Length: 113
Picture 1: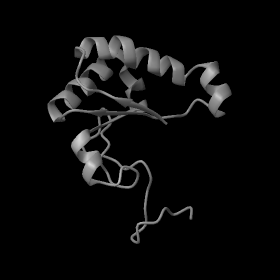
Picture 2: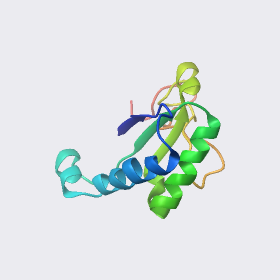
Picture 3: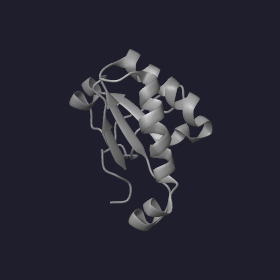
Picture 4: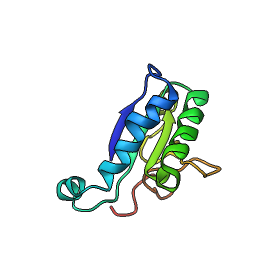
């Protein structure tokens, strides 16, 4: 997983052009495969608020289309009050509800443990 903190200091179009397009190219690259063992991965983006997040998601979809699923978005406020791994606070382009990074059973433990 790769992590991006977006402080809303650049326009949405620049985010798509300078972050999303190169980010997806990196996840699909031989360099990424060599470093991480395969080309599956997630790029987590934490930003300032819901409006900004929705704009970044729209820009991500416009720039990389079906490749937008690599990117997951949330806002800073959510990360302060939720478990960032097991709570469904991450949004993906095209999904109606947020998802969790890891599934937890009813006792809050990851099923692989």
